[in-house]
Length: 187
Image 1 (cartoon, rainbow, N blue to C red):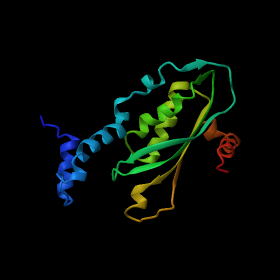
Image 2: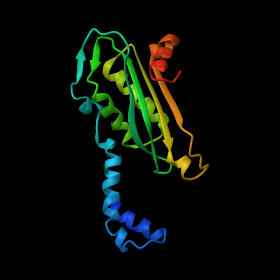
Image 3: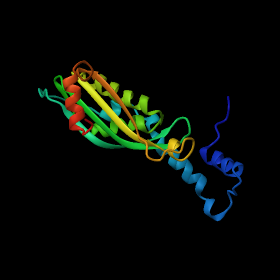
Image 4: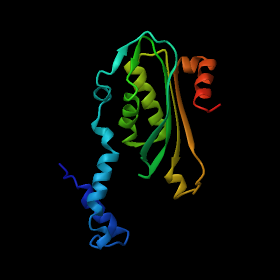
């Protein structure tokens, strides 16, 4: 069995390997801060969708589109461990069940607070809502700015990535999809 090395100790080694002194005044508390930061930024691994939704699904005969837009997201790119951030727009068409609105951002955070790629994050959100609500359809659009593209590599500071996952009627019916895109201002 291999012994786990703490994030704090790894940070000390990282600082040394880039030529810094972990004992320098400004860096003395950095390893503890980095550990706390990574524990928070990856806290989604300890959460389960069922627990986050916590029974906030209600029987309701509403059958029109429900949209929650401009939900802020922050995540870490799994390829470079650099942040990406932006907005998430979510819609669903109920099929006898609705969800408490505050649960949607909480659901997003379950997956955003893991090492991610934006494409997977988008699908995970959509599929989780589909599984929890069994709606007529779910739509998720994420538009995000990736620091791995802006700070390094191609260094494109003004580009954003947009991803979508359209399930059920949002995939099958162009009119429903268009209505969603118009309502979130993406048409």
